[in-house]
Length: 272
Image (tube, rainbow, N blue to C red):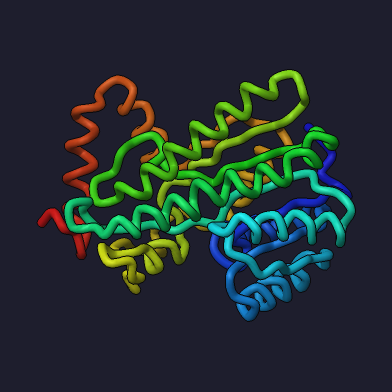
């Protein structure tokens, strides 16, 4: 296990959900924390909460990870403020709920720009510094990165792309000391389903699930911090998520039917 004290972590999408929970847990572990988000007010609120819980040094960076220049700015500002980067958590993401035939292509592009290209941009600019410190690049993915989910074409595509990118990065750096980890939380209590895009690119504004029955963001964050400390390769959380990955290897056709029937039961499902 590596020492987590006096290190610096960047967490994209750090103003809410898993991102904010990760910021709190890393701060508790002794990290200096840089959080990013598109809205200054929510970033400031999150930073105050992180400081109150962990008494940590927190840097707020207003940015949109779908924009390459913003991602470069995240890295530059973190280096200027803290002088180093040890861990990059690629957490910022957006989801969708719509069948592909009805979906405007701009929606798919938006998901790829944020979920995939945001990961690529931030990793590209942070990697030289992380390599110096033999640090970690983390991707917060989803079971949708293993299984093509109906009504989630853009989301699954972006997560499959993230897996391919990070897997290749890991293989390229087998001898450099770089740690690469992919975390697939499964269904987690968060705001991502309310902000998921519909076929026209507007936020859904509601969730089809009972969020209180899902895994908490705090528990996911504890798994991520532990995974960084142990330099794990992959984390798959929730019983449902682990079963889905296993079934996908041996019974893919059956799993497609199961995924379809599960999503068809959602309150706003297009498959009713």
